[in-house]
Structure formats: C-alpha cells, structure tokens
Length: 188
Image (tube, rainbow, N blue to C red):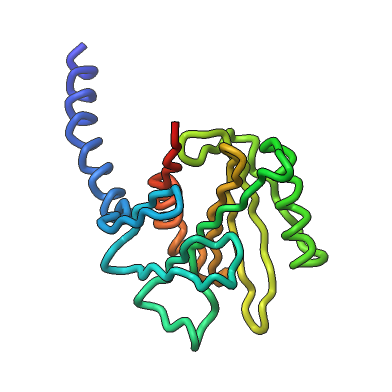
C-alpha cells in the first residue's frame, strides 16, 4: 500500500513538470488581433501576422494573412486566406460544395493527390465542415495546403492555409488556432 502511495505522489509531482515542458516546446499561439468584415470574425497573432484585404479583383477572397517575419518575395508563399462564396444561385449541401472544392483544386493542380480528412468531423465556426489536404507546385516552391470549409445561409466559407512544405509544420499550429477562432456572424 505504501509503494502505491509513493508512486502516486511521484506521479503527482512529475506530471505537471512534464506537461510544463511540453507546453514550452509547443506553446499555444497567442491571438491578440481580430478582423471582422463581410459576416466573419477571425483572430490572429497581431505582432507576427499582417492582414491584407484584397482588391475587388479577387472574387470571394475576404482577407489574407501573411507572417511579418518571412520575406514573401524571396521565398515561397506562406499565407492563410479566408474566402466567402455566394451560393444563392446554386444551393449546395456541404458534401456537394466539398466535391466542387476538390474539382477546383484538381483543375489548378493536375495529377495531385488530395486527401479528404473530413472523416474526423471537422468544424468551422462550430458548423460541420470539410477538410482537404493537398500539395501543389508553384515555380520552385513545393507547397502544402489545408482547406477547411462549411456551407451556411446560402454561402460557402472556407479557410486555406498554404506554406512551403519545409515550413508547413512550423506555422500549422497558428493556422489551426486561427481556424478555431473563426466565426460566422449570422443575421437572424
């Protein structure tokens, strides 16, 4: 009985230490900035990422975020893009829109493997979503991307995180935290 108590005491002391070490190795991103526009709100790391609002030429693209510590012109793209597409002329279910997204990706990236990771029941703004992971080549850059989207109130909302394959894992926790902060502002 005494060995069990000693073991439990040691475990009680060691567990917080181990958790503390892991939280320092992989700290959660701090999202201090916020953007609200066109029916959405998203939080982002204010000091490390810069929001860019596209010109009207980019149909559907609402806002893009790029890291401020990366030289985008000298290196491969790293960005998180939020897009909203009006579906009022073609009311689509989530599954139908996901199939259109897969076709769009295939058209832009022939012969590329697309992984449908929707089986884990992803959500976007607390709504059922699809999740697609794929790679693409852009000049000398081998890019990896993840797209998470949902359909709500006759609109498709999707977030795409794209990064050079070598830096994809580095920025993935930020992208995931931003996706979790994303909110669709519904009008009742």
